[in-house]
Amino acid sequence: QDEFFAYANRVDEIDPAACRASIEQKFSANIMAQNYVERYQEVIARARW
Image (cartoon, rainbow, N blue to C red; front, top):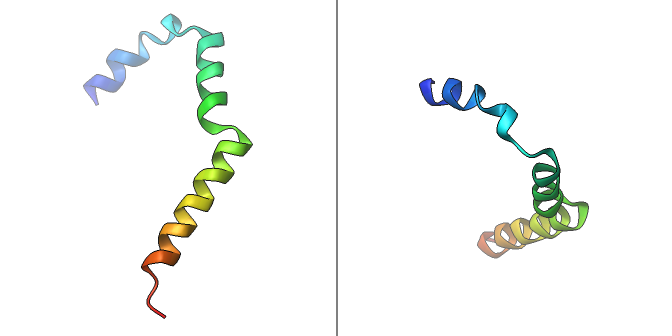
């Protein structure tokens, strides 16, 4: 909890453009779809039919 408040006071140090670029790289529609497919494949591989 203390760590949260320490960083909350530094929110103005975040570069909005860098933040957006990071999020777009990690959470684009293609990346999210790929991650879902990988998780589904893992679940299917563990399934006991």
